[in-house]
Image 1 (cartoon, rainbow, N blue to C red):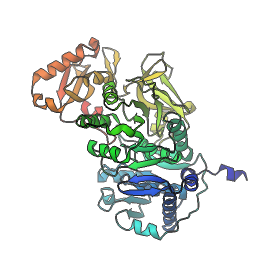
Image 2 (image 1 turned 135 degrees about the vertical axis):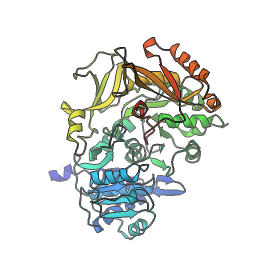
Image 3 (image 1 turned 90 degrees about the vertical axis):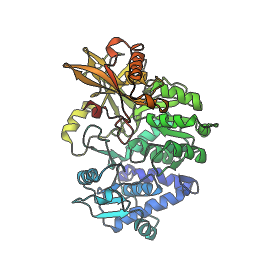
Image 4 (image 1 turned 60 degrees about the vertical axis):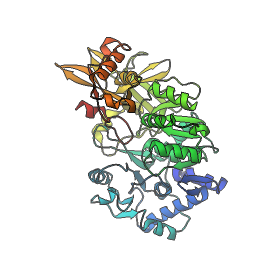
Length: 504
């Protein structure tokens, strides 16, 4: 009898109550396609039965290389229900990257499109490539619409994600069945008050931990609906989706908020009228973007910090209680500390390494003993790699551990200087890195100019003006040595600026 109590499969947890209580409610809107909760469960079951037909074993990896679409849900949840481990991967990589991911995960099945780069990857472990634009839908239709649930436990691995690899090869991050429920109950419910009347729309894609929570775990856990955008998120199609589907909860990252803001200026009406809450993560939200967004739409953006390792946001601002320029306060269900190089907690206001602890944090990377030793500390703490300080319970982002600059023996946050740079009317985006000058580290700025200023890019007076602007607003040791104008800044697929590439 006890064994039955222990059985816990997150796919069944997210789907079965919904299929009983709201069978005919639309779970997914995607283009002109609608999928009800009843249809979602049936297709997830069909996918689980397809894995039985293919003789896949529980714990075998099923790599998912798909745009945001209902099929992503069927493959992801169908694999978990069956007991296999789905591995969603970034759709914007090269053939060699997919060969690495397939080999590292030893995936047996790849779900992709016929002409994708992933489809071209060669690998030793793969048994099946299933194409969503060819025979996969045909096979699925033939499968029975009911399936057994694999008798997993809360603590068992349910799926993998890959870290974005902004500082090296992506690392496999296994997550357990309970992890999704923990973040959906502690963040989506406690912070966002998500409920069955909500319609979620996430500009971040499902293969990111952030997007997976926003578009799959959160709406399904709370009986809400989700809008999926299969194409890349241009500001124009993001605005179009918001106008058409009228979401109530909008999830983005700072660069996307910034690009949408530029288009909002031309519109007479505010397309975001339906939205009750806006969320940002991925990197720190500059106060300037927060301010302009609120002026334009009337909505505060709740900035927070999460990670692939923690599955979603663990520090966040609260509605009506936002401190711009901070990541907010700790989310229920998590703990956080700021420590120095020796592992001691630092006094309030001092900069140190952010470490966190909580139920949804992975127990370690797949096959990476050295990284695990470095990142996973005694007592279940995870070292995020981010530098923070805490003031009055609010966490203030100071940059990545390897992005922080030590100028004249004092730690300098590149983010602080960047936040000043983007206040200048000419500056669209900015990144600050350290370069050695005569053996000493000095801060240098890289900037992209706004449209009206691009003609000035060859003009020294604009860089002089920007350097002057920074020096009037920051203490001398935080001044920039120089500013370089570039067409674009190097970024990860999630839109995070890769400062390490500028350092090179």
